[in-house]
Length: 591
Image 1 (cartoon, rainbow, N blue to C red):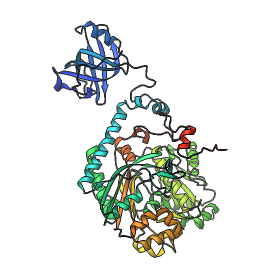
Image 2: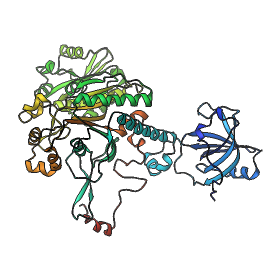
Image 3: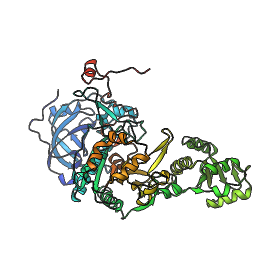
């Protein structure tokens, strides 16, 4: 039976007991990590959020205390009172390893059944078990460390932006559905039959309204919701550091946000980030790295050999140049490290990105290549020269439309870096990607759609081509990229109604559609909208960066699975007929 704490009041955390406490009397409370009985002496490792402390029950302990200590099992919750003394055998692996507490009192505050998972970092338990028993999983030191760092990020964020004149404003969770690129999570209204709210994909339109309201600088740490197919590091609900500023240009927004990142790196990792951060145009990023979020911790840049092979007689390359390009990367040392079986796997890898195939040139004592029977030895030598190829290198080539070539090679580059162990995980490369395309063509919809959102401002010099050459129009948009991950992005917004109408026209919105979807924003803009722009960071991704976590689920207390379910609570669940009728919803079984 559980005991009351009585007059015992905790004096310290377990992980804080060090040599300075020797000869002091302390009261500790926590969970039993391990109990070891050596006959006359019982050792208990007591754990709380700050660490582990060794508790000793020896022959001097009262009999009833010793008997209770014998009954202790893993995850029992206990309180002990005792005196700190020096350990005879030091454990250098933990902060408290030079001391122990000789117990004089013990209370069992709660018993525990045998846990279905071990509460230790190296348990190797399946993730579905970790998520089902999340309360146990969160007791692990690594998980508690992650949540502490996440909490630090919250505090640093609020401190920094408060110091820089930002006002924290909460925006509603129940709002109007607006087209922002993903399906909305919908919430039926009980009091307005047949009508629905949407959970916000972002506070985008509302933070723009706050600028029209004259707040000048807004900040919010907020939940966002997107009903889309999930990847390994994507959640249906996620957290953004969301901000907006008035009377600014791109440099103003980037400058204050890189100062924020500088603060995070200094306070969390004690790393000094030199400012200003590097700027790279979108077009350069694609040409050199194939992606708009390049990892600069390694080389292996893309090379374009289209001019070399456009009249080579090799039909696949010649046809590709007519519709796109032929490009490749040099995996230095890859000829020896990558077997034919592995190269075959890489060919399957690029096909996931719609590439039709992967050609290679392996440089050894002799040249081995899948295209040697189509190209002369002289042409192969010219290609090798472009890639600065040397003995032991492996050149990999993709031929197709530019977007497919970039997508395949950009992702292949990252895959090879992991395969060849080229990434220094203790280094950090930060840069801004700028001048994104204003539009991108959607094959599914058969029209141009906004690359970011319909309120992103075009570059001033591209205003005249928004309608005539939309594929060439650039945006006043910017992303912050760290080690190959997009950590945040934003843009300068349109505040001129004429430009906004042009944008809607380019996107195929009629005047009626624009009014239906965005009327409340357009109405507000009639009464004086300042030039404004902003940015949103993915707080979950930042937490992954600063904790070194490999999964987004390791930095969120109660995450969903890839099928958007919660194994801990069983959400989502079916509703009763009464619950459905109250919100005027009928469930139709899918065929």
